[in-house]
Structure formats: C-alpha cells, structure tokens
Length: 498
Image 1 (cartoon, rainbow, N blue to C red):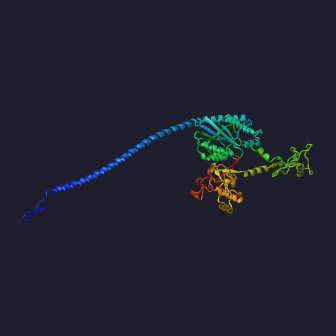
Image 2 (cartoon, helix red, strand yellow):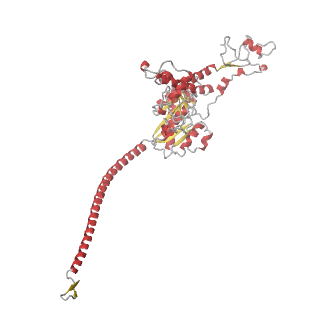
Image 3 (cartoon, one colour):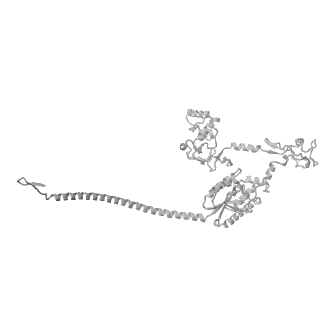
C-alpha cells in the first residue's frame, strides 16, 4: 500500500491488519471444509445406523426362521423315522396269479373246498420257505395272494380237455371258496367270461403294489403269456419283482432277469390240452369212412330234431344198425353211400346260429370304451351330413332354443313340458347324427373319468396330439391323452378286450 506525505512524495508502507485478514480467510475456508466433512460423516453415520438396524432385524428374522425350520426338521425326522419303522415292521409279499394260465393241479380242484384249502396251505408254506432262504426277504411275515380268473371259462376248458374228471362246473367255484377260507389274506376273484379279462385286472394289481413301499416282494404268476413279458419291460431293474413259473415260460420271458420261483405240486406244469374240444368240433362221423373196415357206429335216435339254420352238416353219416346187428346196405352194396344217408338219417350238426345271434345282440348293446390308463375314450361317430347340420341349425333359430339332448338322444329328460330346450318330434336319421356331433363338442364335467354309458357329451379332443385350436380348444386340458381303446364295458358290467 502507498502513502503520501505533505510534500507529495510517496512512502510505501504495509497495512498491519492485512496478514490477519488473510489468515482469517484461510481459517474460515478451512472451517467450511470441516463442516462439509462433518456433514458427510454424519450422513454416512446415519446410513450405517439404518443399515445396521436393518441387518439386526434381518438377523432376528433368520433366527426365528432357523428355530422354526429346526422344529420342522425335527418333526419331519420323527415322521420319517416313524414311516421307516412302519415300513420295516410290516413288510409283506404280494402274489398275483393269472389263474386262466397258471392253473392249479386238477387233483386239488377235483376235491372242491378241501382241495382249495390244501392248495392254499401248500402255497403259503412253500412261499414262506422261499422267503426265509433269502436274506433280503427273510423279514417278510405276511403273504397276500390274489388269484384272478374266469371260473366258467376255465371250468369248461378243464372239462372239455378231459383234465378235470368231474363235469360239475361248480367244482372250481368250491375250490376257490376253500382257497379263500384256508388263508385270510388269500382271494380268488372270478372276473367273468371274456377274453383277457384276467390280464387287465392282474396288470392293475401289479402296478399298484409295485409302488407300495411295504411290499418287499411282488410275485407274478403269468409266464405262460408273452403279453406279460412286454408289460414287465418297464419294470426292468426292480429287485423286488419275482416270477412264479408254472408252465414252461413263453419265449419273451427268457430275456428278463427277474428272480424265478417254482412251487411243485400246486400248479399244472403243462398247458391245458384241447384234444377233446377238437373232437367235439369235428366229430368222427362227419368224415368219410372206409366201407370195408366193418366198423359199426352207435345207433342214432329215431326222432332226431331237424337241423337249425346256419348249421354245418356232415356230407356222409354212418347208417343205423339193423336188428340183426348188420349195417343196411344200399342197392350198390356200399353201406356209406349217399342213398343210405338219405334213407337212414342225416349226419351230426354243429349249430352256430345261436353264437351269431349272441354276437349281433352284443354289438347292439350300449357300451363305453377305456384306454390302457382306464380313461374314457369316445366311440367314433360317422361323418355328419352337411345338409342335416344346416337343417337342425335353421330349426334351432326358428324355435329360439337348442334341442334337448337328453330327450332326443337318450329319451331321459325329466323336465317334460317345463324343459327350456326343444322337444317336439324326435330327430331321426341324419339329423339325429348331426345332433350327436354337436353334443359331442360339449365337455363332460367328469372328463375321462365319466363312467355313464348313456353320456353323449365329449370326454376328450378328437385330435389330442395335434389339435388345430391349441390352448383355445375346449378339451385343451385333455390334450396328449391316448385315445386308443383297449376295453369295452357293457351295461351289465361284462367286458371285452378290443
């Protein structure tokens, strides 16, 4: 700073406060920076406190959750140990027998109830011995045996083949009764007449027991049928499955490596022969015989009934015996000529009219279809007539209401005059078929579990594997379902394998 005297000469002097001002300004700037730092520290501190409290809350929650999970774990371990103890304390073996092929010894069957009891005790004792000789099966103390068969069909087969000496078809039923009474866990189920009925039931029983953890040994007696070999392919490697061999096993069973059991003295070791049934179908008298053998056939009854329609008649029949014990000869001297047949009676006949009539009646009977998974499969309908479809649609518009499905299709509408749908004259022919197609597009509330044979609603998509409508299809929940029928079930409960 410059300063001037009275003469006007300049004198350079410093302001004594200037250094203090500079120092003050520096201090003030430093204080401001400190305050900024303090604010940052305070903000960081608050943030840390907040995060700390959050972590403390989270830790407390985890502690509570850990306590809860620890408690749940202890309960689950106790439950698991209880299930393991129950599974180990009550192991059982399940034996399912296809009785149509694994046939009990005829000598036992002929004894009726007594033979059934003997067979049950022998079967139980031999199985117990088998299990006791295997360390992994020695803990089994309960044996359940389920025999599935057609009593009527097997009885006829045994009698026709000459294996069973008695002609009383009730003998096998008596045998089954004695079999069940001798052992409380043995059952003898008659599935009725029908091809492969026993197979279907055997497979279902086998599948259920294969999943049961208490079942330590699952025995199948069905080595006579190659169909079971295909069925068992999906169970390869399951160590609890055993095969009970009665007759020589079918060819496909040789590639299966399941344990094998043989129980001598209980089951037949050879298939049932059909020699007598063949001779009954083609009687000796229906074959051309040699005239010079001198054989005298049994005398034919005088008043034989006339042959029924659709019968097979043998072309030549032996002539009846005369009162002198000699055969009547024709003018040409040959006892087996057509002239002799014309004079002395017709040959034996085989009537197939009744069988054809039975088949026709069975075709007309209402039925439903199931696939291999016991899911309902709709019976295919013929293609509808486009004109009939248009006609019933026009009539619906005129009537102002849909046709009553129950009234027109099954005659089962209970609402009568109060029904909100159209009754009137019943639809016929092509129009009725068109209504069936329209009704089939409605989803049954029971889906493929429906067992009402008279139900006309739809139970699956017609193209479950490649439906054009995709997820918007009414039956989209049932896409992927197998619609190949395997069995027919009629109203009276009888079944036919498709």
